[in-house]
Structures are given as C-alpha cells and as structure tokens.
Length: 189
Image: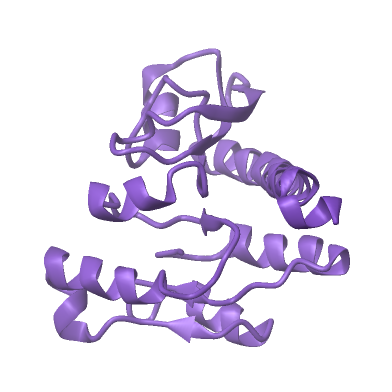
C-alpha cells in the first residue's frame, strides 16, 4: 500500500522478485501518485478506490477491506500516508509492516525528516515496525541510526535516509517471509 512516490515499493519489487516473492497488488489511495506508474512499470496490478471513496475515510477503508480479501502473507506499507483502522489492523496483526523515516519512538507521524532537521538533533534514523492501532507505535523489527551532518540540507538528509530505507526494508521483508515459510505447518511435510 502506498500514497506517494513509490521508490521504496519499486526497490522492494526489484530486490525481492529474484527470491521468488510475488506481489499480488498495489493499493494506492491517491489518484495520480507516482507509485501507480511504478507499479504498472514493474507489472504489479494497481487497485485504486474511486475518487468518491478516496475523499471519504469510511469508504476508503471499505475499499481497503476489499483489497485485503486477496490471499497474502504480508501487507507492506510503502509510504501509505493513512492510519489503518482497528477493523483492518486487528485481523492481520503481525502481518502488516511499515517503514518509518525516523528512529522511533522519536518523531512519529508525518513530515518527520523535516521535523528531525528542524529540531537540530544529532541523528535520526529508519525504523521498520509492525502496524498496530496507534501511530507508529507497533513492535519494532529493525532500526538503523542515520547521523545528521553539520551544514547538510534537509534534501541531502532525506536522500541519505532513502538510501538506508532501500537497504533495510527489503532485508526485513525477506527475513519475515522466510521465517513464516520455515515456521509454517506445510513446510514440515
């Protein structure tokens, strides 16, 4: 699921496909978002709510539920800028993964690279976590610290954070999928 540029999504597809990972679809809540173009380019079906649904939180969540009726091992958020409600998160607990551009619990929510930059902290980071009913409060799976350099622009910091995201997220997703395969009852047959 994504809402924006889609660079993390595209990196996931290119990195994980050689390992046999299949992508059943990309749900995008924003018409015209670049992630739609990226999904089509890499051959991943795109699911979009109607314009009417995109403007209504309840109708959008209904559209998400239809998307989730597909069979999947993990629901991966790649820049999805909406809070999933409990009626979606609870049934899939432990299977919804998010990438966040800060070293949580510092700077949850949105616009966090700018917030970290404005705060003048000496470091920020990247966090991969499971999604719960809160905002960036789910169990942390992996984190990497990213130092902030004196004189660096926010754009330079953002670029470095994206490089870390592009390395960390595929590794965590591959690890999660591999651990599910090893622990599934069918694997012992």
